[in-house]
Image 1 (cartoon, helix red, strand yellow):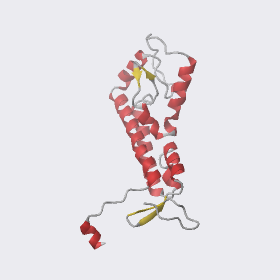
Image 2 (cartoon, one colour; image 1 turned 135 degrees about the vertical axis):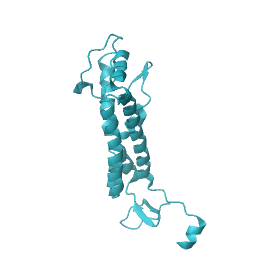
Image 3 (spheres, helix red, strand yellow; image 1 turned 90 degrees about the vertical axis):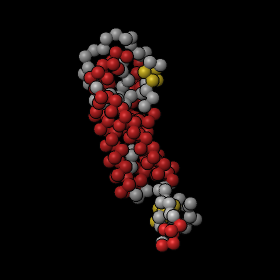
Image 4 (cartoon, helix red, strand yellow; image 1 turned 45 degrees about the horizontal axis):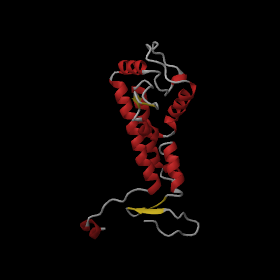
Length: 187
């Protein structure tokens, strides 16, 4: 539904509900929306939507991180702790990036420790978004976090999935409202 480009205008203009919206470079907007929720819309000049997406998505992500005591976002692909939620969580972009770095660092430094008893839980910056050392540590996280661990995991994953929708909106523009034949006659 792009209109022909006018001189000095972007070639990515969509019309939704009688308004023309310049998507500028939709590929760059989608990349920015992936990196920081709302940044792609801000780049396109759709600031209200940018603020809304940033507040809702980042608010939900950090609320989930808080509920899970900072332990719910981590990357792990071992058979005993396959983190299926992580692909959804990483769609939030840069806020989930420390988990990718921690997973790579843990993978390179040493294989996972045995199922030895976990040390008393004490939060350290070096363990921020790091996968648990062993299954006992994971069990301890679940025990200490109670329902907060599961809710935090859910909230961070939903935030990532919402940002995926925002990325598509930054790329393709808003979807026009459907108009019934009766409404078309009155418009």
